[in-house]
Structure formats: structure tokens, C-alpha cells
Image 1 (cartoon, helix red, strand yellow):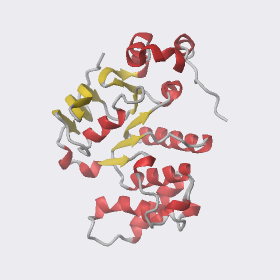
Image 2 (cartoon, one colour; image 1 turned 90 degrees about the horizontal axis):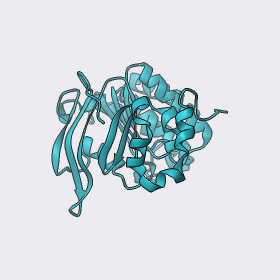
Image 3 (tube, one colour; image 1 turned 45 degrees about the vertical axis):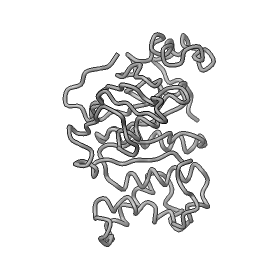
Image 4 (tube, one colour; image 1 turned 120 degrees about the vertical axis):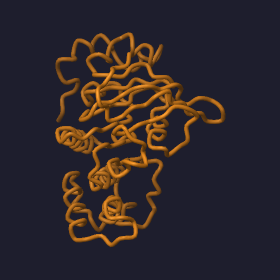
Length: 263
């Protein structure tokens, strides 16, 4: 199942990526409308991170193409922000929290141009949004995992993008940081931003996202969560592991209410 969209923000057609001649994702084809909070969901090794990296041309693809805002990536890079997995970042890099967030401003100014007071003001506003303004002089290596994640999200906000790619921003963080990030994503969506999030927790996916991509090397389904979270598609995505991950019947009966109570 793959929803057809008029004037999509993202178009992915026949996208295939291989590692050592083995497909990591194969023949992926979907579209995403503007202003959606999108979860990319699937089991470990399904190709979720590979998908967004290929869409951003961080890794080469074997075939297919991607259009963002109906254009090639190089023409719209200033509209796009990326939050990588925490494990892919060198946290020993000698930079303060404010330095990291200010890096997000160079896309607007140009890498060889001096940043202005306005850029620092925007960076501070972004840090306030993620609750990290009191740590501006702290070295990034001295922060907890959840705090580091907040800082990198603040850096992406400083880019003032329209489309955000986030690779497992909820992984390995505490409940307070999870709620902070989730509330922030909802605010971004209300401002018309489009956010793609690689997410590993099937239990919380229905609560977090309004549009879902189910992936297991191939695309299983993509569309509004009410149409995607059905036993047929979930079973195709997770196979025999599904019963270990969740109670599908219980989930379907709770779709009209939040899955979890938030403290």
C-alpha cells in the first residue's frame, strides 16, 4: 500500500542501495506530503537509516531517484536539516554546546562568512526550545546522551529548514528528554515542517507519528497511520517477531486513545 500524493515534499522512486552486492533497501517507492511527522519503522537491519542516508546522498544508490520539493537535492540543500545517530558522532570533538548549534547557521551565511549577532540570538532560541540554554559553554563531550541529542536537534533547528531527517532521536534517552523532543516535533509540524524520523519502538510509533513508512528491505506500506497500522502490514514487516514486540489486537483497540500515559 502506497498513498498517492499531490505536490509531495518527498518523492522516492525505485530506490535501491546495496552493501557488498547485497541489497540493504530494494526498489523503494513512496511519496510524502508537506507538514507531516513521519515515522520510518521496521525491524533491526530493515534499512531504515540507509533509506534516509540515500535520500540525502550521504551514501550512493544503485538505482532510482529522489526528489525533494520536486527538485534535485543540490538545489534545495538550504531547506533540509539532518540529525544523525548519536553513535556516528565524534563526541570528543573540542566544541562547546553553543559552537555546535552555531554550526547550523553556516548554511544560511556561507561557510567562509562571519556569523552575526543575529545568528547567536537564533542559536540561543533553539537551545531554549530544547531546554539546553544553561549549558552553552559546556563541552559537548561532558553532556549525557540525552543532552547531546538535544543539542544536535537544536543545531538542526538553527538551520531554519523546512524538511528534517532524524535518525533515531529517541534512542537511549530518558523519559524527560523523550517528551521534550516529541513536543518539539509536534510544534515543528504545526509550523508546517515535514519531519522524517527513523524509529525503533513499534509500541510508541502510533502515538508519535501521523504518517508511517513500514520497511523491511522492501517497502511494505506508506501512508496515514490509521491505514498502515493494521495486522496485515505489521505482520509483513515483522513476521514471526511481531508477537514478541506487541499485542496487535490490543493496539488496534486502543487507537482512539494514547498508547501510554505520559508522566
